Length: 197
Image (cartoon, rainbow, N blue to C red):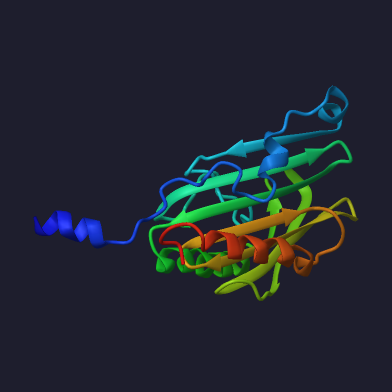
């Protein structure tokens, strides 16, 4: 009796993300014309083991614990260019905060590294301050090969309650500020999900 009452009074928690909840999702789920399909492609994944879209140390699987739900959407174009949106709901705000703490440490540890498969390729990560949700971090990297700079990848990681939001793009120079509008919009949306904020 006491257990059933406690369960009835406990706040609901999110164990799955509603369909079309992410900002890119409606476009990603809309079938592309043959012309558009030749120029761009979306991928949607709900895998809990998928690594973070910003991944300084190159983990092949998720290394953060406490995930309850996740969705990642990536867009690739023939330009070539790419962008992504990732939303992960954790079991607690502390678990979500721990991810940002880990990312700050990993950027320092893996800020400069080479690619074993291409010794002439170097990767340099950096971070910057950002103001979104409860806490946020701008981060990204630039690759250099054969004396030439390749496109810069920019990311913004923000936390609101138990939710972690990540936005990335490889268009333009390093500018996390350009991604804050999307992150702020999602930070408002996630609080509509039960138990997140």
